[in-house]
Length: 209
Image (cartoon, rainbow, N blue to C red; front, side):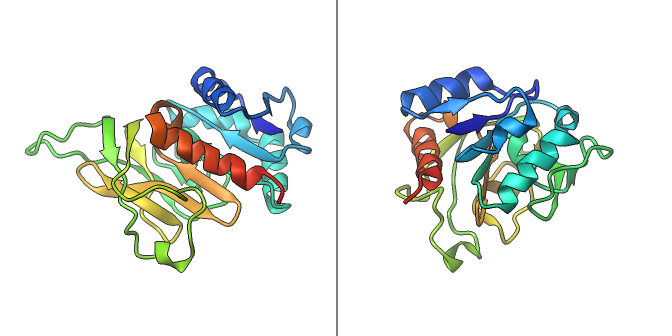
């Protein structure tokens, strides 16, 4: 059973529809302790990083405890940003800190008419320097160049946990993966076949062998 976290900023309706289309069993927990039996946890999200303050305290502790025990965690858009230490968008709000690094605002480029926020379809580049260290599970069965849908103003840096990047005036992490922690800056539930494929890969990770 997948725990789909609702903290008031998630795009739950579209994620619900995608999970239903994939035949996944999921629940929206009403209290943090309801995550303890989850086979996987999804933290979606849209909007301002300050919204993740609703996860501070018991929710953050419960999710961190499950991750420490090996439960797969998947952050989507704002949910991916929350996996990091924090964001310049709301410096007073702490992230989950399961991935090192800090979220920063995209600079854009007035001369090249690269506007922020970044809204639209971009292709994924799998050629991150560190992606060859192992076979990424989240991107299994996909090829570099797959297109997905983004809508955001802030983004994560390209670190050793980045397995796919893209560019909008500058290069940033589009997909991250470290052990049982996964994240995408785009919206897989709105990214057609490629997005559903990524969600299906996460569900596979959550299925006991």
